[in-house]
Image 1 (cartoon, rainbow, N blue to C red):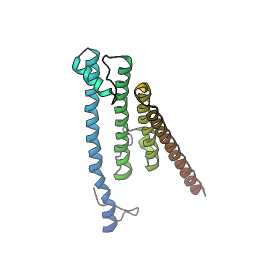
Image 2: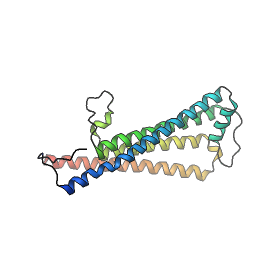
Image 3: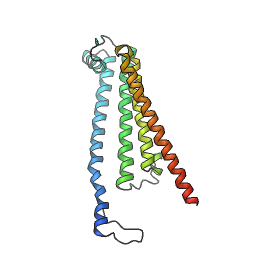
Image 4: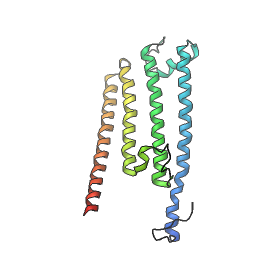
Length: 202
């Protein structure tokens, strides 16, 4: 964290330099998200272990699975079925998608708002990171949230007999709001990009 320089190679005056260096206050936030990622990894393996144990006939694993997918106010299932396995797998996919969202926020947010990582030429550099900015990050986060919402909605529809119609309608409306929000963000970003390009050409 060296003292920043301007485009002329001169050091910034103390107040602008101090304000600019305050971006490093975000570093503990991103480190905290990495810890949250570790919690999700642990949760994923616990759920996967229970699923494998349930498939093998382990009574404790079966009880954990039934408890995890139980709907409040409904009688819990008593045997492992294709629907229950599907619900558990969708839960695992949900964890993976939230983990992907965390990676986008951690890596993209750090690169955009804190400091460059200088990953150019690295074989594992994410494709989207080469052109990431605040607008691109917002659009990708919106798409990730839609994916997570889709998984939750699919889990609800698979288990629709256990929910009241108003719950199904509410979740569908919320998902549609997420879709419209993402479309609005993408459209706004497109207009901003076109306007910026037109300004550069003129």
